[in-house]
Image 1 (cartoon, one colour):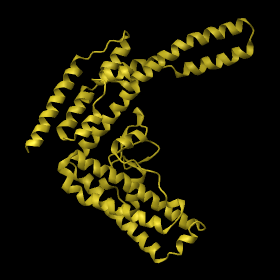
Image 2: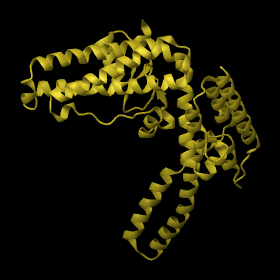
Image 3: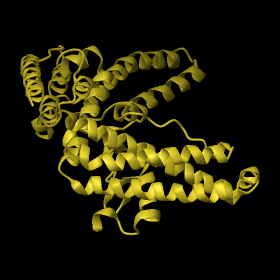
Image 4: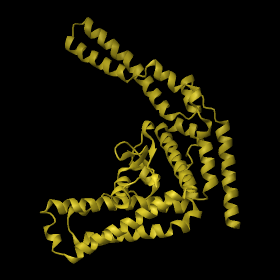
Length: 339
């Protein structure tokens, strides 16, 4: 208890230091729009605006070259330059877009970097997690001046961590879904192992029969799902200690399921049972996947971020394709939130 109290005091001190940095850091860049976007942590819009300024500057030169090419009767070159001008103009932000990104009424101070970090630190004492979330260059706005793309990644990382921890912290339905999936994955892989071990000759014909090939592709998808589930369960246990006892059996089932998959692979020597290396941590998952500002969603089961390429909407909720597919085929034909 003394150790936990000490950890909380350290977190409070860190929060105080961060708040001082956050409050004192009013970045001045010499451009009122840049200042506005930086100080209000609208980094995605800031990147668009900086790109807009860069293209605008380059466009002046290209237009001059186009005009000169026309004067000199260099018609082919003029045609190419006119095409380039049109292309560059299409990349500029229009007046409405510029007005939108500087609209102060759209700013929610309760979603500021400091505010979200404060909430995360109130839930977890995980030092490693805290270090992953703290920008290297002081406040997040100052970090954006040093490395804008990296600041955007920090911002998205914190957003997803906050969303994950907030959703999982007091929602037993989510951890119950994880338990159901882990149990059913284990049962499914156990059945597969029993079939294969009872008929070892199957392995020699696996590459010749398409239906068997498809069977093992399905097994591969199950393994990918249990890898992601293991990731979120381990992350929850390390981030929210009070969830440890509740999730210990789920984690055990996940580990057993992965061991079963390894045994299945040893029976069948085929590339179709191989699996892409899955991320081994929550942050690695965020780094391996791109999430645009326009499509930030999380899987309603796994609570990990998804994008339009790996998700599906089912009864107005977003799901990772793997979790939705397994749920409807192996757990229940009704959505988890309608039960």
